[in-house]
Amino acid sequence: MMGDDDMNTNCEGLACQVVQCEKMGKPPTTISGTVYAPNGTLALYGANVYVPLVDPGPFTEGVSCVQCQDQLPGGAVANGMSDTSGKFSVSGVPSGTDIPLFITIGKWRRKTVMPQILPCQDNPLPNTITSLPKNKSEGDIPKIAIATGSCDALECLLRKIGVSDSEFTADSGAGRIHLYTANGSPKIATSNTNLTPAATLWGDVNKMKQYDMMLFSCECGPYPEQKTQPMMDNLKAYADVGGRVFLSHYHSVWISGEQGVPTHAPAVWPSVATCNIDDYNTGTGVIDQVNNPKGSAFAQWMTNVQGSTTPGTVEINDSRQSCTAVDNNKAERWVYMKINGTDYPQDFQFTTPQESAKEDRCGKVVFSDMHVASGSTSSSSGFPMGCGAGAMSPQEKALAFMLFDIATCVGPIL
Image (cartoon, rainbow, N blue to C red; front, top):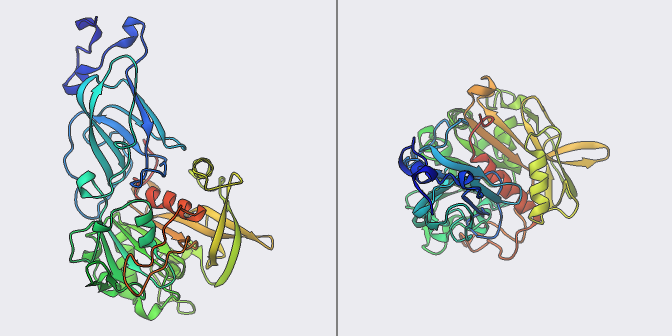
């Protein structure tokens, strides 16, 4: 039987329900499980799992500067992080009934209640409460804008990781994922709702700032005439205040600017990477475990989720070659392909504003030459008619890793 000496005495709130198991010669009170994407099958790395001291309330809507800090929102009675297998074990958890639990990656957040936690033993949790939310009724989802493109379908990647179709709407809708058309799907098929042109988004920095993240699917061409200098300035301004940007293939134009026209480019970004070619390749990508601080974790995760048959590599179909080099002092290279003795970057990420010290940066930009595979297309019949079913391909898993990573805070965790 436990007495008062077995409980925390100098405490507040839920911390007072932490049993001092070691005083009784018993193991600590722990919870364990696996964090999954909304689909309940793809294990996720780097999720914060914690019992909050107090409920921090809702996230701030729209873009904000989120830098890594030493305290989780609302404080933590006990906390842990999912490993490269998605598994977590959190020690020193309060025991009792109706114990709250937060699982977060950036603004992805599952808030749940653990019905009963037994003291001085492990309490395994089912994946029904450790998966990120599929829709608003299950928790928080970042507000995301996606520009549809005729040669890629990033919207289908979000769908494949488990986001409910009800969350995909036009910008006038109530969904957390707003689709805009940019030479891709022109409407939501289920509601026959036409999509707003992406130029409306790109042309208004305040509209951009309504979103936590923006994903631009490949349009089959760079179309620099449709991405004016003010639009390029807007995108950089959005990223500089904390926005997250995911660019596919020909959207390298937002980084390098219009080829041959040096005055048509965003400031600073062209120095991050050299993107001046257009080639097609299918083969083996190498995960960069030297120039990327998360490279080893990424490689291990890809093996654990069966995205890599050979550790440290990823088989790539429908790959492009847009960039010849990345400045490793300014960006983190994720995947590259070795072609004729030269390493060509496939995926890389950099923080913004580039002209500020690293500790003062707020935003992230990811570029990928790997298209979404497994038969997904941006259908003229509208979303989700072109989205393929079936298991995720290796490159879809790699893109999913980067998609969740871009949502996380900027900088090292202090």
